[in-house]
Amino acid sequence: MTTAAETPRLDFIREIVANDVLAGKNGGMVVTRFPPEPNGYLHIGHAKSICLNFGIAQEHTPHSRCHLRFDDTNPTKEETEYVDSIMEDVKWLGFDWGTHLFYASDYFEKFCNFAEQLINKGLAFVCDLNAEQMRAHRGTLTEPGRNSPFRERGIAENLDLFRRMKAGEFKDGECTLRAKIDMTHTNVNMRDPVIYRILHADHHRTGSTWCIYPMYDYAHPLSDAIEGITHSICTLEFEDHRPLYDWLVNHIDGLPSRPIQREFSRLNLNWTVMSKRKLLRLVKENHVSGWDDPRMPTLSGLRRRGYTPASIRAFCKGVGVTKFNAQTDMGVLENAVREDLNKTVERRMAVLRPLKLVIENYPEDRTEEIEVVNNPENPAAGTRKLPLCREVFIERNDFADVPPKDWRRFTLGAEVRLTNAFCVICTDVIKDATGTVIELRCSYDETTRHGKNPEGRAKVKAAVHWVSARHAVSAPVRMYDRLFSVDNPDAAAGDDGDFTNFINPTSLEIIEDAKLETSLVGADPGQRFQFIRIGYFIADAMDTQPGKPVFNRVVTMKDGYAKQKQ
RNA sequence: AGCCGCGUGGUGUAAUGGUAGCACAAGAGAUUCUGAAUCUCUUUGUCUAGGUUCGAAUCCUGGCGCGGCUGCCA
View (tube, rainbow, N blue to C red):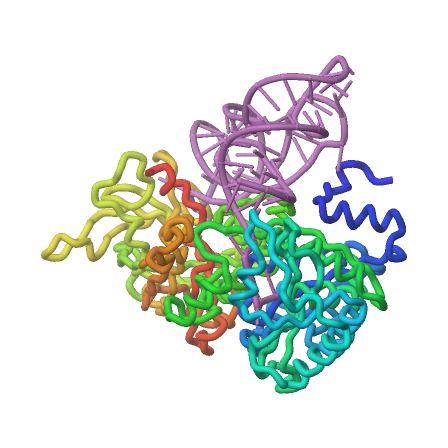
């Protein structure tokens, strides 16, 4: 018996699954599936679905599995490039479908046989109405539809027509196969829905074998049933399709299982857009560098940005699973990666916008090495040696000519600690002809090493990061920020506006020669660090060359000072 | 307009007829060689009107609000 504290609350989907298992349904088995259409790259919203479906299967090991199934029933939109990226992204997120990789297109032959079964039962007919006529017959949300004039064709005629559709005797759109349900149904999806359409198009897997393709509403429940899916979990917009899902599963004989569909609300993140159509536009119109641009909410973008799979999984766990139409703040995602990286990643010092600081009482020809800890949160990460000489770079914004009220950092006459080294007092501020500060002079106090505070003086309040000028390496650092400048680009654009008008013009700022501590020159592609006091960074996996790192900013540190200033 | 679904602090999410809790955000303080992290404390909530009940966020009815649905897309 576990206590309440040990038993995490189940979301409503997991509760349904748990109850079914308890009731002995499906022989105690739980079989879920993640069914993407390969018409784009996976995004953070898909991660929620992946974590749900694969997560549920994991939780019911060994009486469970989760299938990866490509819902590839529309050859005009689907490509193998997308298939490959989807598999890569699911694996990267940390999930494994084992041998359970499927394609809806694998079942085309079966779908076809089931369609003939429906025809033979008098439950499907070939309809010659064109798209416009069919729309006119469908009725509206408030008015019932009218029967197609072809609705009462005989079984033999329907069978013949359907086979000729399949044989390629008709052009695109000339006719369709429709389920015969109820044109007066209040649910429009039940008004004799099209289940097969003619499409003379090459399919990414079946090539030119087929010229008729099943509709999603027809293929999906049957794919689920063929694979023995027990719980078909999808997003809310399919709720209205559930009666059709059930109708098909109930009216077709020879299906190995009778899955149930349940719906949850999709993830909505602010400060970004999530629809595949819009993401595709960002790519095609070069608003971003590609699907994996670090500003994209795609999994490949987040990966390149430096997000960890663990942080995304933690985020998905945090947002929960409900039917409420929720808007999740981007800050929650950012917090998830900070929390992960804080514990796992080594600290380094890097100066993004350098200002030279000369330690006047430090010998010109002297160089020393200071041993510093790599990660105060994890002693096992060990230590490294940090070089120091007479001239160092500090961050320009760590100096204030006229300091604001509770300023703790550099200003003339103030004492500040150089992190990991000693305290210095700023003794002189050197400016050029325009009044721009170009150099700081200071003196250091040898007695303040090893964390000792200067005796008899006010306690030093600030420790700032620095990089030894003689040893610094220059590297580009890409400062990524949110892609949009408004929290809801869709709403800002309205119905006929253009969301690309709200792209954040400063979502990418490239610092060409940041000054990095020496050890960073050997960063491996994909290696992450915390640049002390600045944020978390990753050596870009594509652009980092041996000895020539390029860094991406994953996320800033939380900045209590900036917040207080607002 | 019709059908379906959903309404709990700023945001997200628990409480399954019995003390409205948690996380993030926000605020105050402690601590700090990262204005980070950590620790302590605090503010803020059951859409609304009725009904059932000893007792309602929970069940019922009406209203209001939000979302989805009239592709040969998924």
